[in-house]
Image (tube, rainbow, N blue to C red; front, top):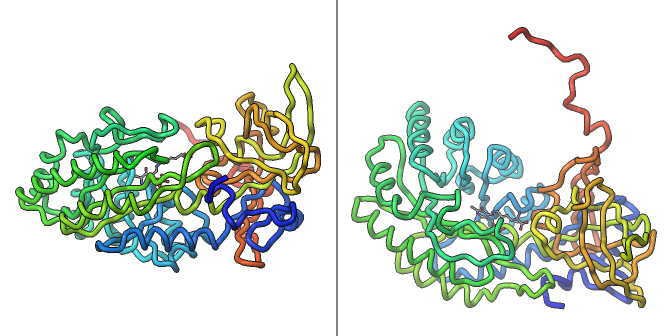
Length: 427
Ligand code: LLP
């Protein structure tokens, strides 16, 4: 099992699962289940390693909030020196609330509303990556109304071949909804240079997530470099090249943690030659291996020749297995010698509600605590309250200490916005 799946932070000690120096059972007893548990040490370690890999070129890491926007994680990354990458007004709000300064924030996303753009310009953020000419013109109008020029980057679709574990997480190939098509890009830059209220500062791409190789970075950067010289010839003074997120992590099913030295060699020389500041937007790389999901086994059941482990977490807490066929390594918090091949399923009334199918694993019994690994990214943030299931709690561990950083939702929270006495209006 490679580093990243069972990182040292979540290694068993004498047969019992730990998070750093805290037994998983201790957390489950205090916080209940299902609960997400994050290790501060893993985030610190990963931030330092990624920073070291980018040495040699001016750069800034902008953590992508979409992977996990828990305030405790944001605080930690901000203290380490990270900036923030947001994709909505809600994420902008979360980033500001966690203490990120406006100049530490960049804003991307294919469908930003006028209100979101206005908030971003008003706050004075570092960069807004626009994804179409229509968005560029809207932004120019809004910035004009506010009397504040908008700092603009162009999210380009470099139209390169991208291999990921699931088609839903590839973004930079021809025909994807994201970015400005490469053939239109120079013309959009020319248009921008003639608009009075935008400042052209950067070029941006994000080719996919959990990338199987670094080739899309290399091919995409080559396209951005080509566009950069055309943009400069048109009079743009570029300050930033943003290469998005996408670094893979090891989930334990054949994927490996990235070779950051090799990544450096693909990225840094090209960016150095361009003479710009490199921006990166990693999400999964920091958050995924920092977190596990703890879930209690409720029942065992045999049906149609299959063995089911019925847990108190499912697609409502961790959608990835169901939505992307994603693999998450699962073990019992207390080691068991016996093994079985089972489907690990949740309580939700959907056949697609599973955490693992046909999984050869420890023979988990009712009452056992399951540790579902590499669940820190795209876990809690993609959870839902379907079947009126309150959202899980979140816990941060740092050495021998731990804290509930997000309370479990209560039933009252599920109905909080419903009106007791709705106000009916005539059409
Ligand atoms: N920047 C942009 C513009 C993005 O669209 C994304 C992810 C990132 C940065 C961060 O990518 P990362 O470093 O985390 O790969 N829910 C899916 C992943 C969706 C990724 C969406 N965009 C999953 O659970 O695998």
